[in-house]
Length: 179
Image (tube, helix red, strand yellow):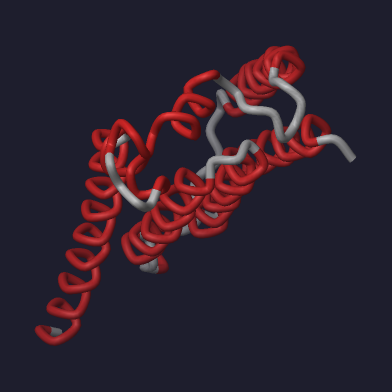
């Protein structure tokens, strides 16, 4: 099956999971549905040949899931009361997500065939990267020289997610000790 078909299937899956996250009454189940959407984004990055983004998305999604579950684990905040405007919100949400799906299918058709470089930049990296940078490892040269700011941003996101998870876990442990 072509990669475009897999990406469209993933997009449909993410839209369905988003609707489930919006419509489910239990907050923890909604958090899990949002986590499923994030993990599907990670899988789509793998299909688009961006394993570094897939790893960052996967780790960030796991940490975010831990934080949200720890924050909403109490029993008194799980069930939400139904709202009167729920049907209007659901209608607008479904229409918006359907529009995103239709527009995304057009974008997926513009992608080059799977396995071909997306840009000429990657060809430049392969042809002259070792000579320009002087590194023996071309992958390290690309990550640390050509894409240094991108790598710094990814490391910052991971560091922030870890700090947030540790903060929530320590606060919960401290509250449990005091009680």
